[in-house]
Image (cartoon, rainbow, N blue to C red; front, side, top):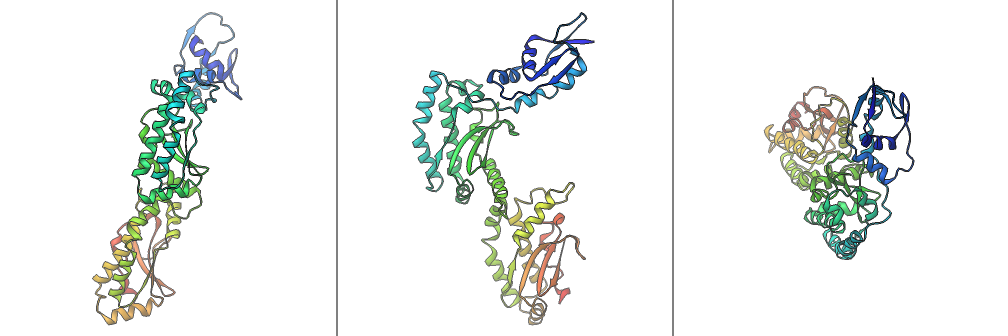
Length: 385
């Protein structure tokens, strides 16, 4: 049977494809116009077709061909960037001038204050954003809307912890805040990232002006910092560092002091942070891994847990005040060093175990069993003496 596209859908489809009697052939649009892309986006999907039983003109073709070609046109259209607007209407320009451009110095001053006094600038191209305006707020109060994106982002940054602000200044090294529409967005309304040293407020093509406060919300900002830290070549991600700053760094000296008191002399604790993080990161990317889901968020807490578990095990195994056990410990652990590491396989333990190599006591586990039963770290130390 032969089918025909209704006129409204045909307008949209003709922009994206070339029609040949009996079949459909794709055509590439080098520089699609705003009207062309908007026609595709505004068409009702899936396109409406009706069967006919009389000879058709140039735009008729078998239904199977139609289905094969148009099945992905909607998704492709949604991912196309709309060309930059040539000009804004007088009233929109006035709103941009009054509510955004003239307010920019004040907005930049507030942003700078929120980010620990480091000078920041705002760089936004209204003409590249306005073609995506669909709601009345975005269309009629465009400048006010841009102001709100910046103001809400500044408030979120101001409420952030000082460590987060410092990381924003470091990773967004250009110290520029901008707004861009992301045609390939996987989020619903807005988010943020760091690219080319700029902190970017990202807006979904159909989300302009909606849920503005989400853009630089805590979860989105932390993801942006984490992605930027990893792509920037840092050995540890932002999220991992944040956990270490909360759980491990403040408590390391206290745990070392406890271990020294229990063993009768100082010992060095080495968590091998970069090596372990790299092993866990690689493990997390393997299909079917047994690594816990939120390992990165819990990295610092897990490191703390292993060494705190060690202290508990030393106490339980009666090391405090026992000269014989203490002497035996340092006869074997001659370098007075205790390290944490991940290995491919355990020799005896199910989740973790202790081994001594070259005078170093290793608390070891496998990447897939990381953070499991950390309280048992060092459970077999007396068996090694």
